[in-house]
Length: 131
Image (cartoon, rainbow, N blue to C red; front, side, top):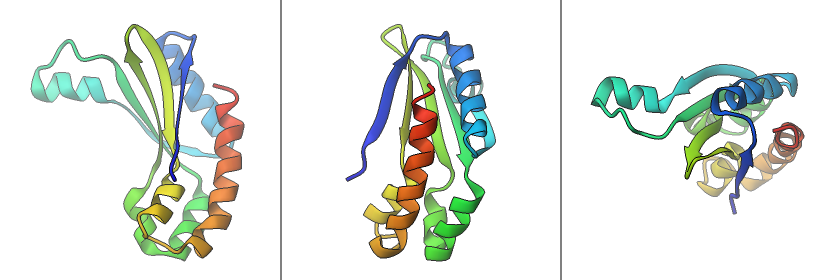
């Protein structure tokens, strides 16, 4: 089963995004892109009142290589992402394990993915405790 991590944060939106980027990088991930999804909706669709939603796309290079060595199909769910969003006037951060998703989707065998999931889980939870 793939659990979704979700927690309310007490920082304002922009400070939460900045904090999560710093923590994720400190814990060994490379932040590839931080993108305002609500900004894209505004620019491309003219939607001006959509709640704020930012995706932070990150990669653990060693973990990515391990996963790709298990099966090149795992790359279909790359990169790892954390999202910060507004909901009911509160700010949340959320994450789901792409490594667990790859296993559940059958992109690679459980035998190949379980050690990677264990390492990734430790890294993500170390970061998660700091959000």
